[in-house]
Structure formats: C-alpha cells, structure tokens
Amino acid sequence: MAQRLRSRRLRTAVLAVAATAALVTGVFVSAGTSQAATSGPCDIYANGGTPCVAAHSTTRALYGSYSGPLYQVRRASDNTTKDIAPVSAGSYANAATQDSFCANTSCVITIIYDQTGRNNRLTQAPPGGFNGPAAGGYDNLANATAAPVTIGGHKVYGVFVAPGTGYRNNNTNGIATGDQPEGMYAIFDGTHYNGGCCFDYGNAERNSRDNGNGTMEAIYFGNIKVWGYGAGNGPWIMADLENGLYSGVNAGYNAGDPSISNRFVTAIIKGEPNHWSIRGGNAQSGNLSTFYNGARPNVAGYNPMKKEGAIILGIGGDNSNGSAGTFYEGVMTSGYPSDATENSVQANIVAANYNTSGQGTGTPLTVGSTISLRATTACCTTRYINHSGSAVNTAVVSSSSSATDKANASWIVRAGLGNSSCYSFESKNTSGQYLRHQNYQISLQSNDGSSLFAADATFCSEGGKNGQGNSFRSVNFSDRYIRHYSNLLYIASNGGTNTWDSANLWSDDVSWVVTAPWTP
Ligand code: AHR
Image (cartoon, rainbow, N blue to C red):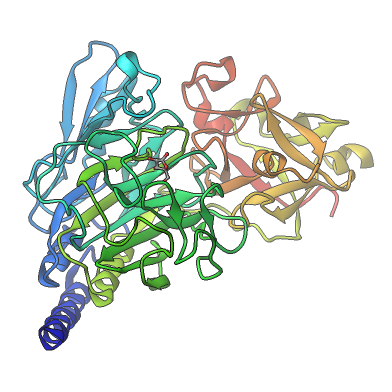
C-alpha cells in the first residue's frame, strides 16, 4: 500500500513537472496580450491525477478548452439576465458584454457557473442556521461591478462580498464527503477582509446548518480571532473545519501561519485522512509556501472528517454572513493534490497576470517620504488635499501660498496602519494625526491605537482610475476610494447612494497626482 502510494506520488510529481514545462512554453504569454491559455489550472490538476470537480471564476476559463459561460449577471432595470463567457476558449472573461448589458443600470452576479461539467454552480445562498438579509432569509448577491481588475491587461470583474453576501450549492456532484481526500485553491483580494464569520470557499454542510466538528473543509480568509489565528495581525489563510477556523494543529494560535495581504493572494487548503495543509502565496509573483502540513487538529471531532460536500462562497457553513472579501477564481479537486501540482497551478496563476487596472499601480509611494496630492478633475487641477485643523478638503496651493498652507497640503507616507501593503497619510505639520474616514467623510484625527482607526486610516494605492496618477482604495470599504466632491474629501463608490458617490466625474475625482511636497 505504502509502495503504491509512493509510486502514485512519483507519477503525480512527474506529470506536474511536465505540466509546468508545458506552461512555461505556452500560457498567457505576456501582459497585455489576448492570447488564450493552452493549459488552465484544471488541466494541471487533471494531469496530476487530482481532477477538478468544481471550477468557479468570473475572470477567466480554468481549462484551456473551456468556452462556456463563466457567470451570469442580472440587471436592475428590467430584471433580465446575461451570461458572460470567455472571449475565446481558455481565455479571460468578456467584461465588455457585461459593461454594455449593465450600462445605465446596476447588475448583480446571479450564477457562478461550474466549468467542470458537473453543474456545481454557485447561486444565492439560502437561509440556514442564520438568515441572510435578502427576501426569504437568502443572502445578498454581489454587485457585479464592485471588484474590477485586469487579467493579462484586460478588464474583468471579481465577486465582491460585502457582509450579507453569499453563494452556495447544497446539491453537488463529485465533491468529497466523509473523510475523502480533496484539495482547493482560491484567489482573493488580500486587502479586502474583515473579522466577521466567515469568508470561506469550499466544502460545507448540505443543510446550511452547523452539523458539528469536521462537517466542513473550506478555505477561510480574514482576521477573525475567535477560533484560530496565526502570526501578526492577519489576515490569515485558515481552514474552516466547522466550529473552528484552524491555522495549524492547535485551536487558537499557530505561529507557522503568517499574515498574508498581497493585493492578490493564492490560498490553498487540502485534506486527506488525518492529514491536511495550508499553503499560500502572492498570486502576482513567486512561489507558494506551506504554512501547515500535518495531522488533523488536536481537538475532538476532526479525525475522521465528516465532510458533507456542499460548496460555499463568502459565508460560513451555517450561513453566518458577517464577513467580507473578494473572490476571483477557485477550484475543488477530487483527491489530495501534490505540492508539485499546486506549484504548477501557481505558475499558471502568475502567468495569467492579475493586476489592479490598466494603469498598473500608479506612482510608487515610498514609506517615510513626504508628498502632496493634486486633484486631476478639470475644475481643480491646482487644488491639493489639505487640512484646516481636523477638516480635510482640497485647496489651491501655489508657490506664493503661505508656509502654513503649504504644510497643510503635505503628507508623510506611512506603512498602512491597518495593512502594511497599503498606506496611511500622516499630516506633515500635525504629528500623529492621519487622514481617516468616518461615516464616509475624511478628516484629520489622532491615532487612538484602535484597530478601527487603523483600518479607517489605511488606503491601498492603485493606478489612477482616469489614467492619471493614483487612486486610493479604502482598506475596509473596498469599493470606495478617496474622492473630492464639492471640495470636501470622502471615500466614495462609483454610483453609490450618497451624493458624493455620484458617477459623474467619479474617475477624475478619485485620481490624484503624487507631487513633490509643498513642505519637504
Ligand atoms: O467554523 C467556523 C464557523 O462556525 C462556521 O463557518 C460556521 O458554520 C460556524 O458558525
């Protein structure tokens, strides 16, 4: 038996190496090209002897030959629906179809299709142990335009899970049950998470209720510490095994599971009898690391596992729906994938080239440097982000401005208080005070050391939405960016319900040129 296992693993490793070689010679050749993938993640898993039994993505085909629908959107204006497919077999999603269908109205994602042919599609999650906020206790559907990114330079959309949003399939085909082996990966936005239960993707209960320890096996991403956590302040990749998010063998803390907050995170959980792993990495570059590889948790009820084989996205097994996150793609496999197979999948993901916008990441910011931020809207190109006491607005600043006005428009770039991959902006002339949003308006406030302040004062830099400079996304309201509106500063979503969310001039108003500081 051991011999058979060894030779099976050897064969898997050889096939995975072959798959990697194929990849290097042929996939998504470079950024900005529209070349179809010759091989997708599910081709690699199949070659490794652990085929996909569910494959979900709103951004791209996960097989080189897949040309069917990726997801369906429904528009508010007339409640009709539209399937969105790849532009060609194996390629990226045709977001232009969505954009024209959803023009002048809003759209939600109604179905995330299963590319394996097993019909393990994800739809609006029903009520379970907890009700969702929508009619009948269902969860909300995701806003179809809230998570725009690019893949290979082409605009596509992810699934933006605000608290209350959830997808599920309780009647699946081929997903692991009991103690059967399985693997799964997902790509998340590493800067969009919260401490609610539970932003999951993977295996859960078929009745949407908590059926006890071991009845789930899903990837969790976020910074809730109620059950388990790892090093640093999070977010962490953990396994949701029901009644517990596990970061390793122990309930609670496991030092080996690091905080991971790349803009695009590859997250992996896999499990087989009395053995499981957590792996992860930067979905834009580099390799995967193994954060845990060992026995089932040393808590009763998880060995053997009692997996039920439903699939969830954005919620806990019992339909807990307080969590937030963004999902781009993910699969579940039959069988326990080898590390080599997953490494090839990671190479495929990196080659697919996820990014934040056609403009890349904008002007790089240097922590510790001082900058000024100039508006780009035609009305206002002489105005800079400025404070007057605690009030924050835009003000005209020029070389003849007073020293105080210049200093009021100068900001020290700090590593994000709530996420060190992002930034906080400390006033040049009021030490210890930062730009912070509250009720969506930005003001200057002293850091009170709370995690809420840290999140409210943290912004992730992206390429400017109008093609100029940078846009700054709120880390805890990820569909909102720093915007000027009537010369005041807000975090604003594009076309949201507040006056300052107006779609008119939104792209210009959220784009800022990073200049030399008025007060160095
Ligand atoms: O295991 C953590 C959570 O506990 C599960 O997702 C949920 O079903 C339960 O509340």
